[in-house]
Image (cartoon, rainbow over all chains, first blue to last red; front, side, top):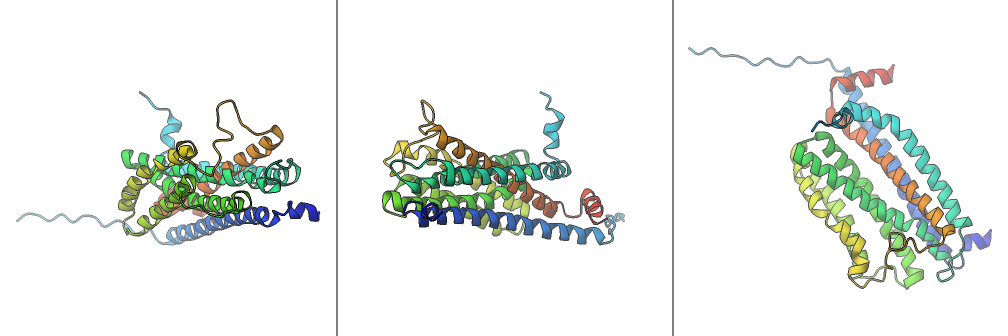
Length: 63
Length: 250
């Protein structure tokens, strides 16, 4: 086991490379989740608002 | 020429949103499973390299993350071009979604490369090495793209201006790929995509390719999830989103 962790003197390099990669993957998943959650919340907010009818264009009669 | 219906549907936000909803669990599940299998195989089972010893095991993450970063850039540039030329809003949304993921993977490739360079070449960073320089440029292209977007209040304008940057920057991709052949580099020349087949033994090649597939699927999983959020933000109060949200909260 210690031999496996040591990676023939290069353990520090190999394990930190894998650690950084894992961290990048986790950060990406977390960022996407946060973005989706806030987008869904915003959509929910918009959905609960009463639909405001669009203002009709006013037609002015020429005199 | 008549284009098939499924092709037209790729321009429809509700259709793509639902498609992403259906595909994402498969991409994410399979991608993570492949990454787990490949990591165990690469770190524990694959044989030791006779020249580099154990430090070579970074080969199961470094080329893969670099390749995904480049693929992300191509996806971004192609999507941006489609959005610019045919004015497909969804294509712009896809381009924006690919950028941060690509930036993260490129950052990861630079870090893992440094950590591999130290025990192998005796240095973390080599100024002037063409591949390292153009890979760093790739990271700055992603960051520049995102910064440029941030400079606009108007989303449509941001889409169009940044699309030009994305398309121009795509020249960098073949330069990164061929840099090891065009110039003297401390990087080795192509190991996998070379004439006469991969120069790697099968017991190293299998976990290598498993990791390539794992990172690729994980990238598309992240991309689709990001695209969904981007669609929700852009479509705002469209009727299909109201219905979708009502379905979800029920």
